[in-house]
Image (tube, rainbow, N blue to C red; front, side, top):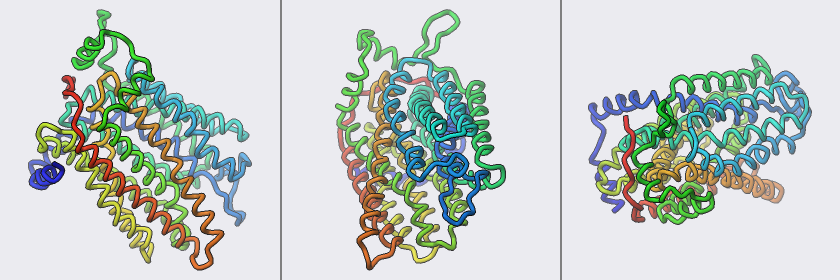
Length: 473
């Protein structure tokens, strides 16, 4: 079946008319996706900027003006807690809870409210005077950020036609790369105005994003109309009627979602992709600093451009191709969508291997750009398949589980760090950059290959039930 889908996809080479239609499709989605995208960029920038506002160098060049750890006076271990556990713990726990609320309440209101809360937490970080205050702000930020994607992806599902679902999800998901690029560029902002003003600037961007979402984001289809009647998508009404208006407990909803075979393999593949991506996110910068110390200052800017440009291009084009593949696949559209993450994961294996075995900085950055172009196409199609496979009243909870899957993937870079520390202390024949290069090559490439296998199994599994109609644009 997968071979046939690939053949159909290959026969559908985009023409000039296709490219024009793709541009038109993107423009038509902007009223829905743009305000959500700004919010998602704010989310990623707020949570990731802390990585670039520290300086633990022993050269004596770090100052309280530019380095948070010097100003607040906390250690590497305390920073590690801020960067990982302090945020991830509550973020993980809140994800399913946030998804359940997104299934029941006004998602536009949840989106705006969460944006205001994490922006307030970012501002609180800027005015903190000790570690405990930074820690409290970080925990609050983790709680608020968990509400972002469940509300957004289910809104996109209900407001966008299924023929454009992958493209819309990919446009929104590009916020990860744009926010990540801005986080990397925070180094430059920090050097100009200091870490405190940088946090205030990021908080201000969050406030602008919340105002934009309030003004431009369409109303949630579940909101009350002037006559007091509840407006819902047709599919929501059908599903609610079939369930006899009986509310489901969160545990039963989770159980139903995890009982779907295609979703099981989808989560398995996504977990492995998250593991590989997080290993890159956490350990790529230390590796390049070790391998190419003379180019360390160039890496921040080049990496920001690669993440921002190549990541976004891969995500958007991957969503477009997934929608084309879904149409070409016939009845089982979700199997067609999964061709994109399968092929992308397989192509990413050699690209990443060559990245961490490049002999020069220029070659390493070239292969890193190629790796982002082929690898980051997976997210939008995967979310589109997930939202299509679960019930309309389960989309938020399903997205919360998806977010939780990514949070659990944070253990992968931690495990890699443990292995790196052990091998560094035991090896006499390899230097640290060679050890880290081998670990990154093995961990990331194996994760990519296994994720492709899981996506193949997901595509090969029979679909659930036909979904109801949607409000489409």
